[in-house]
Structures are given as C-alpha cells and as structure tokens.
Length: 590
Image 1 (cartoon, rainbow, N blue to C red):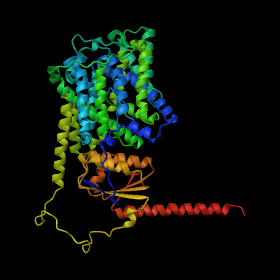
Image 2: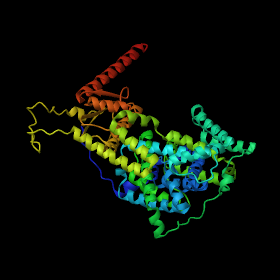
Image 3: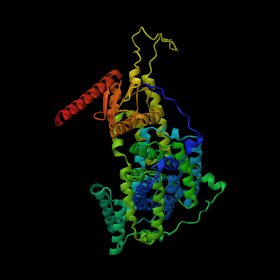
C-alpha cells in the first residue's frame, strides 16, 4: 500500500521528545492567553456537569461504589489532559468498560478491579513507549462497530433491574440469556415508582436534547428525579439507601493489595482493560481530530492513559479511558486545549466537596435511565445497518463480533472479528489476483516512451497552488486505512481542490471507505472540492454506501478529467469576479 503525491515532500523523523511531548506544552508554546483560559473554563464546567452523573452511574453499573467513578474522573481525567497526546480528550470512566469491570468485580472484588486497573496502566505505558498505538488503529471498522453495539446491548440489559425496580431473591446472572430469564421471573416485584422515575428521566433527557441541546439534560433529569423522590417520599432505592452517601474528599493514595497470586488471577482482566481502553481512547481522539482538524499523537496518548490508570488505582478509582461523548461535548463547548479537561476534573472535585450530601437523594432508577440513553447513543445504529448492507464479508465480521460480544466475551469477540477481517482480506486479494502464463516473476524495465501508456510529466500540476493530486496504490483495506486516512487528513485543507486517484487500487473495504468519508467531511467543512478518480463501479458502490458521494465528492474517470473540470470552474469564477469588478467601475460617478 502506498500513497504518492504529485510533489515530493521532505520527511522529518520526530525525536522522542517530540513524540511524547504532551499537547498541553504544544498549546502553551503556541500562545495561551486570557481569552483561551476563559473559553476553557466554560467548556470545562460544561463537561463537568455532564460527567458528574455519568461517572457515578457507570461506577454503580460496574459493580463498584459511586465515589469510585468520581475518583476516576477527578484523578484520571486530570492526568489524561495533563500528559495526553490529544488537545481535547476527556478522560474518565467509560460505558464501554462497564462489562469488563463488572465481570472483574464479580470474580475478584473491588480490590481485584483496582489491581487490574493499575496493571492495565502499566501495560498501556509499555504499549505507548513501544509505539504500538499505530497498530491498534488496524482493527477493522466492522469489528469496532460490532463490539460497540454489543456493549450497548449488554449495558441496556444490565440496567433493566434498576430501571424497573425489580427485586431478586438470588444474585443477578451475568450472562445475557440467564439474566433476561431471571428478570422475567422477577417482573411481579417491579416498582411502579421506579418505572415512573426512570420514564420521566428518559423523557427529560430526550426532550432537552431536541429542544435545548445546549442544556445539561442528564444533570437536569437526575436533579429533577432526586427532588421528586425527596419531595414525594417515593419508595425507590437511592444512592443513600444502598451506599450510604458519597465522601466529600479524595482518599489518601494507597497502592492496591499486591501479591503474585492476585496478579496472576487478574492478569487476563488487566490485559482486557488495556486493550479496550486503548481502542476507546484512540477512537475518541480520532473523533476529536475529525471535529477540529487537529491530529493527536497516539503513542503519547497511550502513555498518558497508562499513567492515568495507575493514578486512578492509587485513589481507589476504576479504569480510565477517553470518553467519546464527553470529548465531543468539550469540543462543541468551545475548548481551546487540554486546560479544559484539567478544569473539568477540578470542577468535579468541587462538586464533591460542596454537593456530596445531596447525592444521597439520587434514585438509582434515574441513573439507570441515564445509562439506557448512553447505550442507545453508543450503539452506532446507522453504521450497523450500513455495514449489513455493504457486503456479505463485512456483515459476517460485524455480526460475529456483535454476537460473540453479547453471548460469549468481549475480548473473544474482538479477536475473532479481527481474525475474520484478516481472512476476508486474504480472500479478497486472492479474488483480485490473476497470474498470466507467460508473465515473468519480475517485471521487465520499460522504455519511457513508445508504448503510449505513460503520460508526459506535467510540472504545472505539481506546482499548482490550488490543486493537489494524491495517488493511492495497492489494496486499500483496514491495515492501511488508518495510515492513508492520516495522510489525507493532514493535507486536505492545503488546496482549494483535492484529487484522490484510486485507479491502482484493486479494492477497498469498509474501513477504507470510512476513512474516505472522514476526508470528505473535512473537505466539505473547509470548502474544498474533492474529486475521486479511477474508481471502479464496485468501488463506487462501497463508497456510496458509506456516504462518500455527491454533493460532497465528485467522481471522474481520470486525473486529467478532474483537473480539467477544476480549471474550468476556476476560470469561470475568475471571469465572474472580473465582470463584477467591471460593473462596479462603471457605477462610479464621474
């Protein structure tokens, strides 16, 4: 797989300091002033308001105490922003890790979760320093969508008990089918008040998201539910009745209980924490890049996530990872850099100190409602349907990952999905490969002229300030999608027109199509005309399925045809400007 430009560029090999320098230092070097701090202050407060109920809800759903989620967001979130390789990343407890943390808590208890978190932090630091962040990006797109949708289903099922106020005589099973059967048997014990609290909470969140999207719908819903529960003396479980309240301070840092036996017991869980945490963090950083046009440093981000997990474990927290929804909220709130994420943690600590006694009135049904909304939003329903329609191969990988995540194990789902993606790639390459009987094993040299195949070199195109042409050569699949997408993103805003030639690409998969979709979205935001040339009919169908088509993208047969269209549009625009200038001159009174 190679990407070639019409103009060669000198490459600079970054030093160790450049690769692992936190984005905070980059922002400060660029010039950070009072206006930037005020913007970060507002965005940090906005994110903290969203993170407050979410952190407690995720911790409770993970089988831990609500304060452990707050400790995670305060300590881990601060370290992620302080040392991270993304300008806008918000760290904290994530819904994607609820399943893994809950299983670990069930098997090894709270101390096992804390030890696994610390070990995962060490693994993440090692992965970052070994520069493995790039390889994590090689996970096929259907695998990412599949396990994310599977996690959403499991989160939803895990909240049914609190959502309906069901009382169970025995412990709730962890597996999906036994869980649903047990909950079905317990339906006669459902609490009408809990159902009402959950329904009102969901209604408030959904309504405010549509009518007042800038308002903190989650916090408002939880506050209304808590006030209603207190005012009406509703017979529902609250944080106070189950956990006895929340401390108003951080605990003293303590190293988790350590022994070789304990390390051996939680090692698989720690590896799973590190793997999924790395995937989620880098996905979140990619989302922030797409929204802002910036580029994160993946290995620096992994090191920061590792330090943050160790720090969270020292204070009794759970797994820290980048959180996509809170990171997107941070960007939309006008954040200028990592200071916003650091202030979000400071605000959360202030909320703990000031408002901890009020948290005792929060009904667990309201927090369950919050997680149900989170699960619905993280399911990536549109992407799921798109991949099902895309091809049988992508649908197979997607469904295998999705079903294994639900019915077997998350790590198993990811590994099997990745293996199927690799097999699918080999199969597609075999289909695309043909061997001629008389063809030599090594291609002979060819003369530069005489066969009519090679066009004369056009130096004007290489130095055109408005047009940039990139040629992609070879299979454009999940293993190359990240690298090529990074290159295309980095140059997509340097010209008024951008031509991507795929004539030498035998096929592209859904991961590549998703990368092209991000490039098209970025070009649209910057007002850049994007052309794709040389795409076969099959390739066009894949791209169109993923939204890469008119009006964002124009397809042309050859580079020459695309450049001709660009020049014609440029000449027409120049003629229009000249005509307008002439009319203005004639209107000047003499």
